[in-house]
Length: 390
Image (tube, helix red, strand yellow):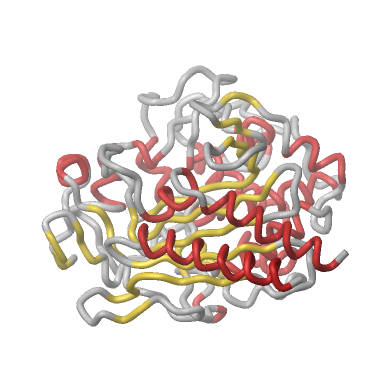
């Protein structure tokens, strides 16, 4: 037992060292969890506020970007289970013509295609004008976006989506799914997420920024974003944002309302691990729904996409991991569980990388998850705990 305890301590030290290495130029917060009753391992490194040298701590919450989509997908699957939706239903059965006005090939798109990113509809996130208005030089930091407002940027002939049926990641799909949920339930989609997921699981640090301010708990760190030459060319820098260094800006005052249910949620590593375990273990969806959610198809190098989830292989650990990543202005995020072993990892950071290009070594959340031994260390940690508890 003493040898196992020593190994356990050493593994935690290794995990902390990896976080410290990748917590540049700002901060990271991470959790390792399993169904074992021991408390989650919570780790932090780096800075929540660079000019004031304030460290990230356990009460900090972060934007989780597209991990928000998993919460919405669960609600959609629950509505299917309740007979209020069907995978083959078309979005124009639920949304008014004015909502879909001038959006190319929106007619006839099904719930299943929206969930699995095969709808063939442009993503508003890929629109050059939206990038400047939503994340770049023309941002109005304190503006709360209306839920349908991002759709105005794709009321035109298609420019980026392939033909319907081919895979193409589109935030528009989940904006439309959120609006469908509101039609079916006759209420705010964020209220359905709260009623069906957040409240039952006691996720007290999770909320939709800009739409649930009354619910917010935890402390938000400052938001930073890589302002590379690529970002400056594609998006430009909002004059209201301070330039911390030649390639880093501080997005003070910005909010995630522009992303709504495609990526506007705030949460903590422990809340997200609790959510992942509940989803994985069948506490939120029936087995038939989980099978549909995990109907995989190729989605780029080393990734497969289901209906609300992704699956990938990591160089540092055996087997495959299921979950979702996220990126918005000011934040990066990753939530993954091992397909075969009882292990969940979550890493959140207060530096965004969207529109910044892929050059150079990975750092921050991506570096920890994809290019370090953190996942394999997490597997060893929960393996030791499992053997101690048996």
